[in-house]
Structures are given as C-alpha cells and as structure tokens.
Image (tube, rainbow, N blue to C red; front, top):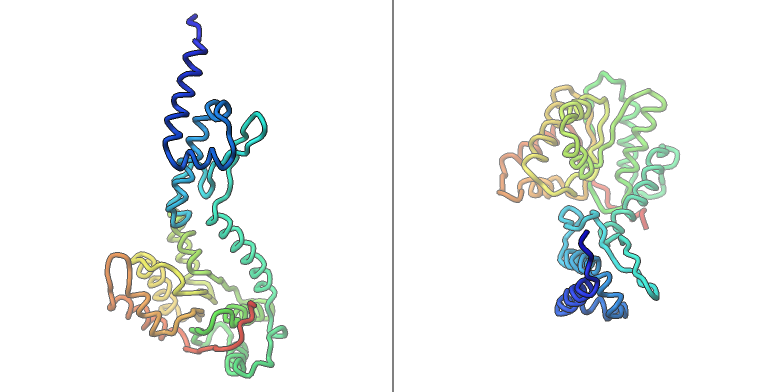
Length: 293
C-alpha cells in the first residue's frame, strides 16, 4: 500500500490556498472572517465553494436563475477558534419568498372566513360595489345567465376580500362550489405538473363560480395568455358560467399588458382576451382606502 506523503499534501494545500488568495473575493472573505493560514488551507476547497456561490448571488435576479447547489441558499463559513462549520444561508430572495408566503397564509385565512357581515360599509366609495354583490347573491340560482365582475382599482382596496365574501355566502347558504385562483401562482402550478394540465383546465372551466385574482401581475407569455387564460375564458363563455376577475389594471391597461410578451407584441390576441372578459363580466372600479396598511 502506497504511503501518503503528508509534506507533499500540506504543500499542495498551501499552494492552492495561496493561489486562491489572489482572487479579491476570496481574500476579502478570509480577511473579513479573520481566518488564519493554517485553518484556511485545511478548508480551502469548501472556502472556494463559498466564494463561488457568493459570486453567483452577486448578480442573481431571482430564485429562477439560482446556480448554487441548494436553490435559494449560499454556502457560508461559520468560523470557530480551530475549525470552520459550513452552513447554508437563505438568500434575500428566499427570505422575501418566505415572508410573502407567511403573509399570504395569513391573508388566506382571512379570505376563507370573509362574509357579508364583516364588510366595512362605512366607506361610501364601496356602496355601489357592495350593492352589486348583494344583487348578484339574490339573483344567483345556478340557472340564470349572470355576468361576473371585472373589479379593478387601487392596491389594498379589498377587491379580493369582497369577492370572497360573496363566494363564501353563496357556498355556505346556497351550496355553490367555487375556485379562486391567484393567477401568477396558478401558472407555476400548471407548469410544475403537465400530466394534470388538461384536468386542471377543465376544472377551472366548469366550476360554477371562478375568481381569477390579480390578473396582470404575471409576466405575459403566449402560453399563459392563449393556452391558459384564453382557454378558460372561452370555455366559461360557452358554458355561461359567472367569472370574476380582480386586477390593479383598468381593462384598457390590461389589454396593453396582455399584448406584450418577451418574443413579440400581439394586439390581436390580446383583444380577443379582452372581448371574452367583456362578454363574461361587468366592469367596476374601486378607488378607496388601502386596507392592508
């Protein structure tokens, strides 16, 4: 069995470590953490990985383009007196996503419990909308051909809450099924499970009541506009099913938004989507207090 030459190995480690110190980023990390030469050379390979991952993070635009071994995290040295513990630290995008998820879970619980009795009726700007929702509730019997709502307006004005209140009243008192889709998220869900794509599109197309929430917040692609949104809207038109949409954009702003994909501008296909929305919904605006403050 060949013996390991420790002197040669230590020399190689030191040489590799000294070579890495020529990299300004590597040297800055060593200096910042006050890592001595002996400890640094022993952990040279892992320190090199840390620097590589930190460089990836420097110009990263989001989790979708993360190049690190653990998505949304970077390897970082936790230095003790005579050893280094290497740990994975969540990046800023992972922290933002966790915060958004926590906020969304809290908001989701509020939406699931939304009801007419909890709606703030002191804001006069909301009165026409509240009356519309009450009239829809009274008229809905699953047979009449009723239009839904395209509700747009200021951020945090309670658009989603008000529609959930209507849907929950209909579900609890008239046993009407509904689905509420946060549109940017549902696009990711559909992409993640292609095997269930047709099944999910059919489900969204045939449920008695549908809410497409926050339309216009997504990045537009031909697939999301034509294959997902266009298909759902067309099917619901054919089935005469009430469809509700919330957006921060007016219908004209939405038309411009839907026309622009990364590859081209297609005003004709955008116009088709808008015409379907107009066939399915009544256009209403709500400009009022930000209830999310």
